[in-house]
Image (cartoon, each protein chain N blue to C red):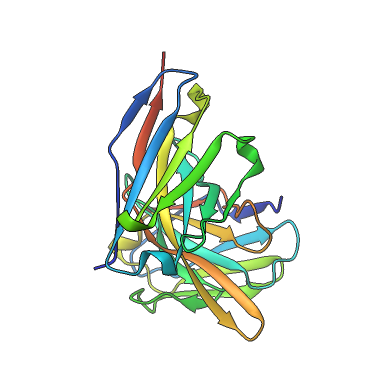
Length: 125
Length: 108
């Protein structure tokens, strides 16, 4: 079945970087864009960015001011999200999610139909 | 960025009740809206996309409507497994694809 398996929990010190992986299975990896979303405790999800897994093109939220990098390894069907210059406010659960698309005429509708289980990143001195 | 608000932020309901949640966008987003259900400690689960299209496998008691700036998610007969937090997400202008603040549905 279609699955996204994420790497395990991380504990980092302020100023460090973290890299989270997301391995896809059960579908053709390069046929779907992959996005990353994080959710701080008790907060709404926050969109971080996405990667077109076919050509590697990326889009990032300006809210992260250049601290986030998303890459993919097509041979391993895996996407990675790296967040640098960590601070305590980055403590959150980080999710990867597959981006589905539906089109009706000239309109293209995106949605996130398969999610990883989440990776808890704790930033603490 | 497009901002989303949801109302109510919390609602208490009984099994069998009809429940309606509203999501409003700060500017028109046509039908570029999705709804998700999230239970504690779990990833969000897609319910509705394109404002009113039911995702595969989602029970028909869930429905979505609206376009432009006002949208609704309706659960026609609340079931025990529906007690959760519901988020709307706009996928019109990007980045970012913003989420609403959520509506927690609790047992009365």
